[in-house]
Length: 483
Image 1: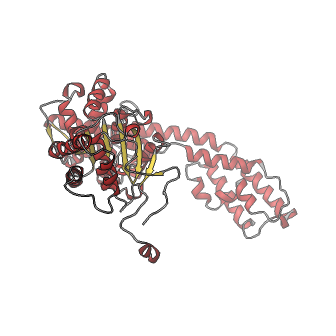
Image 2: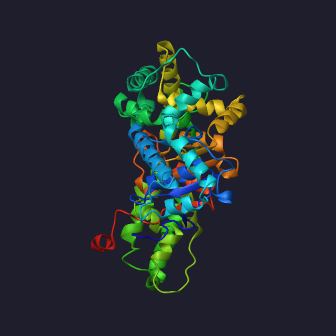
């Protein structure tokens, strides 16, 4: 079933003419033939097909990096590509005809003149099919491990460590150590603030599982957690004291103005939205806040937080008669925005914990001589940004001039940063290709660090080079109409 392009600015992907160089984003919803398309592009890369739309040279399976998220998916991709290569060989040699619906393969074959030109193309396809056991089709973790091993000198990777697939127990140990060292000594107001973020050590352990997937910079030097909270509390109190200044008088002025409006200009106001029983209570709450300020003014004011500001007062007016609103109304709107913009304790505490737990986890792993999958990603990231980064990037680019990233919507910020450092998405270089294939509607790996904002960042970097598979082969018009 044909469907319109789903994303503004995307163009339908034509597999025979799709540009096989630079960086491009392909959106492929469920049932639109994503794996078929990957195999079709693979055939063209092997043949060097496409002239100006093709890659600068023909490639073999070890040169074409294909990455996805599970070992099962890599096996399926490998099998499908191998089968497509074999089918193409038979068609190019005249041993079989393409299926009636397979216009792509028919057109691809006909692009090569019968005789030596087509025979050479068939030979390349046959050689590619025979070396599919050496195809560079990997999970991202397996590829990172391979890069660190094959480029050990440039990456600075160690040889005497053991890869540990499941680090959950070591992460738990590191988080528990942080809780004992940093939280046990706390008491009073400082402890209360910490317990608002993590009610128990189990909550801390769970929170760290997500934060430890990314490198976290050390925050506030070597401050202990208690010192950090005390410092943050004092800064917050100082800011609140500045913000509260004059608000007892301003609340009274605002109340006097509202009283005057309902006494002298009552017809201009909607009595169901603005009445003394409402605003006097809101303004009393504001006066109480001015006496003991905190961050929760908006929640305490409830509806008053919207009604007392200019937009809310405008909404409560009747008719078109102009009303000069008091300056205190706009000042209240600004006060609420300033309170909302104040830094959250939770973010500061979580960053502090993540940095210290990460350091502790590294120490535990060094003692045990182990490393995990996340370490591989981070080490490759650091290596690409390090002193030998240029040489490492050049080596990887020479090894894999073309990369197809399947299920790209489930890429984490760190994973995308690796690809971007190597292939420099925004540069759109004709000397390499980075093809990002995915569907943001199918993102399922948030628990493993996937971040839809990585997808949006890639969309921005590939602006003007967006494609969509616009035919759903799993649905019919009757089915869609019924749904």
